[in-house]
Length: 275
Image (tube, rainbow, N blue to C red; front, side, top):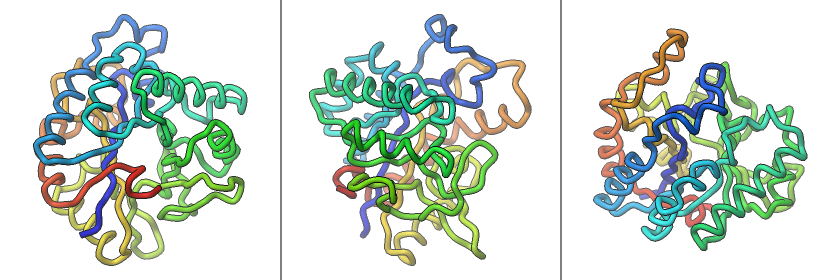
């Protein structure tokens, strides 16, 4: 059985990019955080199923919950960077991006005592227009990125990128590890988690991942967020129907689906599978 990579993007409900125009960063300190209790539930689920995973963690979160970060590391999981304050790469200059990824890397390493090898851009915001970011990641000491999603989407995506692990032309050793897609009729479809995992019936997601393992003979990369197992999180008002649908769809079913996923596939850490 091929071992797949299970990844968690550690951010809280108010930090998602879809709410960025609705919830300013200046208000984050005043909002009730729920990330710690949700991460503890995820750690329990992983422990029950004897799975080690990769946690792409925001520096902003790590500063405020260092003991949570230590628990992740002490339980044998990989810590990786999700940047500091969930800025999309498209919002940053080269200098600002380099400062962001070096700051978050150093912070996570200081708290955990582990080397941080991986990075995932918020909202998969590395694309054909800012591939310089991959050079900056290599300069900052990262060994891999999981920041390019080879799909067409209204907020992110690089449809023509390779579907599986590759070394970008403008780096020497850095690996780019795209989130998993399935290919039908010349087009890539999301199969690696997030809102699509809550949207598709579970049997469809399971079939997609099985196809990647059995037909493509490749490990899958799956991701989700702690807030996706939290149907009791504060509800936002004044947001569009599309944003509300995407964010709140099937939150109450997510944890059960993750438990099924944990039992139906073999899972591991990004660094142990790809490096």
